[in-house]
Length: 46
Image (tube, rainbow, N blue to C red):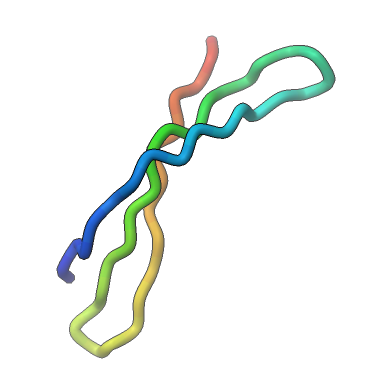
């Protein structure tokens, strides 16, 4: 698996007015088979 890069993707995860988390980065990776996928950094509120 090879990570191709990531970018900032600020997005708030809310339930009504309550903040549940923040999506901060999204990356793209490539499997050896040629298929690709995404991975996200999510900062959760506790």
